[in-house]
Image 1 (tube, helix red, strand yellow):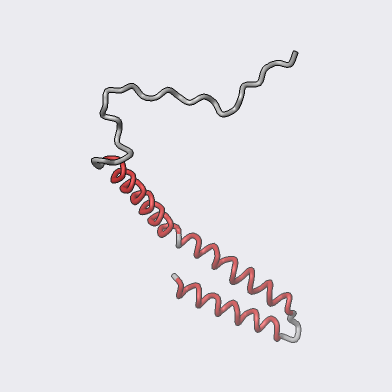
Image 2: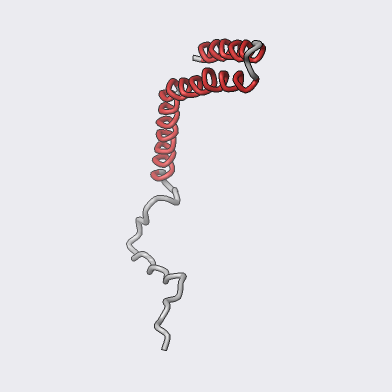
Length: 104
């Protein structure tokens, strides 16, 4: 994939140089030629061809997170293990924000 990007960038760079050095060409025309014939299409191509790699990376990251969560939740002595005792859980804490009453 990168070979195509490098080759097309070279071609469009040469097109821009030819535009800039032509007697009827301008530097602005060379910049526009390079941007519209080179950078824009290559950016789209790299994005499209890089999609499978991004998907693989996301799936690998999700699998690693799931494996870490499964590994951390089940072991003996783990702090994430549920309470095996017969005691009732503690009462819920009160709200941190005081209730607002009506003004007299």
